Length: 399
Image (cartoon, rainbow, N blue to C red; front, side):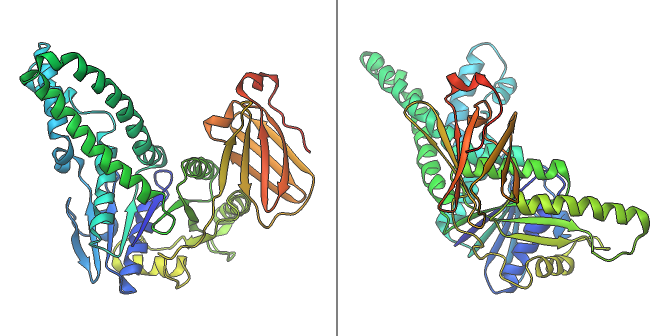
């Protein structure tokens, strides 16, 4: 089974590319589901047909779904939400307000993820294509299993102490907390399996959709950085709405092509060694099955869009005993010995011979001073000082 998740800045065309990918997969004979986890759903508009919160067949081998947190919230949270609502109501608030306050932060992300996990476990489909929310929300969604399990670990330790203290008063007094912890444990078990599925490169792939514009590219770099930090496998980048190379269109489109050419070059450098796919900017609106099929064929050049296009860890961070860190980037096609680094805030500018790259650092490294870099075995290794020593300056020296 394959799970492919498309993410990127709002408005870059994630929904369109996800729907096109799913349709092409269905055309190739695979039973495929395309599902939207974005609260502001637009998948139905892209397919040009109404959708619901359950998978609905929209073409041969193709099903579509707009996941509704409201419709499914009680599958996992009924006991948990009821317990908190009763507690809050007991503090003097009416039932309606108590119900509203009992909606836990992150609940919508957990429910969306559990939908994905359900499809992975039940294997109702050969491929599941996820049209994700804008980058920030999706990164929060993908980090939720790790965050949730951290909290559960602490809550379990608290529970053990509480049960020992309340044991003499057992019976009805322990019934509420016991139900609460059972609900939490059910979620913990589900998220544990989900984390394994989401980080398995044989099952899951993450693809960033961009347009050749500065803010879009920078946000995509942040997304790739954080996906790598959490061990989620990225296998390609989709460059959407690329203007044709001909000279038509007059001065306005000529200028737009110049701007796009600059950012296409930046994308080529900054996302290496990931494969890049280009989707054209069509004169027609890309809505409905016919145009989506055309987009998928043009973008992936007739190939199966659900194959794994890249294997390998793009970056890894190793923390040393002295508090310093090493960032390793995969640069298999870059040669040279002189590595120059310049750091500005969370941006790192790298020069190796004729190769230049700008990258967004994860927060774990953004406040540290870059101490130098070297190429070793197709990887660029960049050192960062310990946090205590990081106040000495922003500039890294070349090795």
